[in-house]
Length: 209
Image (cartoon, rainbow, N blue to C red):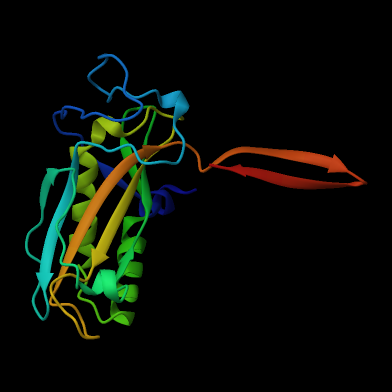
């Protein structure tokens, strides 16, 4: 790719001082503080909780409040919230990668922001601006940068969520909309790909994790 196209596809991050890792199923003994203590070779596509997540909120008819990074954990929600009763919610998914020269790259976050806006409009939901979305993703990755796998070992999967919450028994737009982002280191979704030749033709088979 030409340099101009390459820079349009990737968002570059400057890395601040490190944060301390929390527990996860794949943690091992303490080691290099550049990375969380994860068995990177064993990564699949399953949740490994990281240190932090991002939280912001918007009330119906208002703008999103400034978000903040908080410790990863459970959230409280009303049992009659629209996300639970009527499915008023959506999610995005994107990845951050570490390069050989120790940069962290995020692939096309602006496109995910635009898609979230499109989905939110269809569901009569408030949505964050493109700039708000991209900045929130950056903050989440920076706060969890020790969980970005070494080059070639996987990626940090980033999951933005937009949900309808608040007490709302009837079928109507939610009173408020939390915007959350959490992350997890993952391996390749298509872990193994191989070709099988038979009967004069070749087929490609994928093993999914």
